[in-house]
Image (cartoon, rainbow, N blue to C red):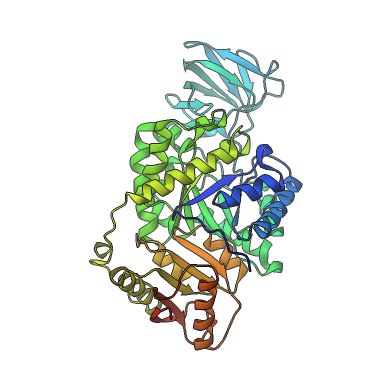
Length: 482
């Protein structure tokens, strides 16, 4: 068996596919460059486009010898202006401008229609509306029927279908649209490992998404992980309940920054990463991380610091968007990200014991996971190995900065792919074995074949008895390779 090329760094890279990266060859190269999850953005393209790209990811993974995750990112509600007769208008500060939900003709310098028909009921005089990611600011003067009358406070070019945010939040659009429900069916047809839900405001939004996913995936015996994209002001006070209803969150800094203000986002990012780790959830940091590399072959120093700080905060993954979807340098982008992740991790504090102070672990499997980390750290073990069915034990261990590579061996392909997003976890597929001693011997042979351990190395391994039962980890063994 060919050696599997596993990432050297613990932080995972999520890359968005698009026109710049929609060939089998480029996707395979991205996997070789340490991408661990491919994002399919359902805001663009057809259902068949996503089906075809998912098939390419699976084939490229097979060729590269490393399984990775696929994340289907739902579009969510279209809170946008309509189209203009000339494609765009130049709005000047102080001018009057109308957002008209009843307008059917194309827009002009005085008014434009709305894709989001409920806007007149969501705003009142004095509210501020931010268009095109906050580059244009309108203040609401009056609401008359279906028309929102505004004054331009910050002018600029407004073109077709640009987004609308309300400063401070408060738009009532549901997180899941009819399009999202159809897209969930498409994503489950190729068994996407994760589904990212756009604009959730509460746990109810995530619970509804989970029900829809489970129904659509039932015929395939599949259960995707759910990622809540935190991009609404209303989601911040309900972050804990959203996390409990999800498998992870995405720090979606674009829309969130428009609603809460740019200055508030760095502290919120740190809070979200910390809370996700404390609650044993996955966290992805996203939006404009390497934005300049859409057109330049190297990142700015500010972008390098941005990625590195997310790594130092403990994020599971950093994500590209347009940089790899439509940029000129998609491979260079993931290479640069990989280098930044590795360098940042090399500067991390290596102490682990403080993580356990004041912590109570009542579950046997969770206590075993923490015991493995503690012992391996103090013995200077070469690796921590978990035989796992559900992936829970590796997830728990990955919440702590062990600085020892963790290898998760599973017989379940879906579990292997899902674990590809966990920080510092290298998932490998191993044939199932019901006898404990045989399974442990096979695991060591598996690691030796890949050059992960060699004679004289010490490693910690966890498993459950009886073998093959999810959530049954109850054994920790310290081994020395003969």
